[in-house]
Image (tube, rainbow, N blue to C red; front, side, top):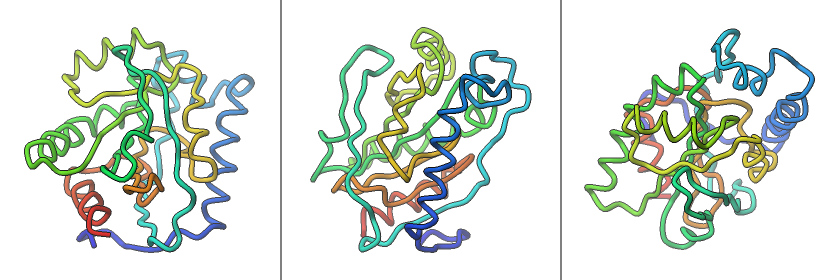
Length: 205
C-alpha cells in the first residue's frame, strides 16, 4: 500500500458515475464553450477544470474486463495495449499541452519512467495527447523533453476504450495490470512518490 494515500475499493456504482461524466464530457464538446474540448481548441488555458486529486486502487477481484487501447503515437508508430498482456503493466497518462496541471506533473512522470527503465521493471508508459493535433503535441513533447511515448488523440475518443472507467479530464493517470485491467487511477496531478507506490502495488498484486 502506498504511504500517505487512502486505499479503497472502487465500486461498480462509482465507476458507472465516472463513465457518465466521461461520456458527457465527450458528447458535450461541440456545444459547450466551457468544455475541456473547447478549451483545448482555444488553447488559452482559461477556465481549466482539473481532476479532484482522488487516488483509487482496485482490488483484483473487483477489476473489470481488460481494456484494449490502441492508436498511433506522435512519432507515427502503431501501438496497442494488447502487446503488454501477460508481460507488463501499463501506466497511461492523459495530457494536453493546453493543460497547466499536466505540465506540472511531467517532471514526476519522466522521473519515474526513467527509474523503472533503469531497474528493468516490467512497466510500460503510454501517454494520450488529448484534443490537439499531433504536430502541436510532438512540438510540446520535444520542448518538455518527454521520453515516454504518447498516442495522438486529436478527436478525444481514445478514452472511450476504458468504458465506465474512462477519465473525465486531463491530467489523469491509470495503471493496467498484466491482464490489461484497470488496477489503479489518479484523477489530477500525480506525484512521483504516489506513482511509484501505485506501480509497486500493481506489480505485487
